[in-house]
Image (cartoon, rainbow, N blue to C red; front, side, top):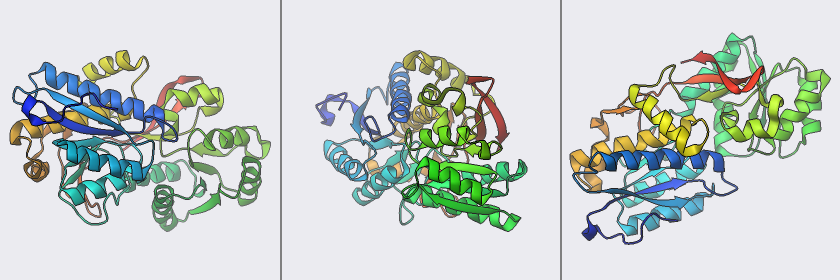
Length: 366
């Protein structure tokens, strides 16, 4: 899908490719919020005069959570002459897009994917708005330990992203006397998972699995098992952030802490953007929508200052100084991270209030 057909620069339009999961098996709710933020950012840029008087347009491609499809989209967007590529939510998909963008010499500003190793080697072509997984998930581990949970079980599926998250948790929790036990959901159904959890004696179960399934079935089974009444369910990847979670699980979906990348208080820009996103989405915007908006704000500043030459865009990442919806955005080389990184966006650990599942409670900040 595309907002425009003629890709040549003769028409004076500056085009940016946009990647998002907009159809299953991608996380469609996240893709919809990401695209809403990107589109609102473009609207605001154009209302303010565009890029040096030239209108900014998105060329949107649906990744459907498919790494090969994402890599092919980057190839296509490069041929179409976009100045840069933005977006993507799923980490494994963004990794494929980043590798292709790096190979082609096409700037890619990743909005939401958090996998530390977004590229195999350090690159100048890729930068990222979202915090690295190691940063957010260490804070999540601190939250668990502070709440008295030292024996942690993770319900997991085969994935580079889930394996990375499990490793981060284990490396952070084990030196503090805790343990992380893996329960493989490719071999266990929800009932068997409950049996294993009861035997392990873990006090917390983390959902490192796909949404809506098997995450929703696991939550229902654990909630209904009297042996597990005291077990905390957690979802560091953020599944409960979206309205679909509350619709699907109701009260069962409350009290499940997750990572959210929002500050205690939005900037004045953020407050205005929040109202506009709420109107556009017809629901409260997630942190993913703000990530999309901030991505366009950064790209617009870069393109205004340095033009549409791809090499100049990539070379400008270290000089980015953009006032975003959640604070001032700067990029640097964070230790162990292969791309230019905003270090760090605000991080919260939040859950849905059991007394009112449509309301969020902030449990921990970092």
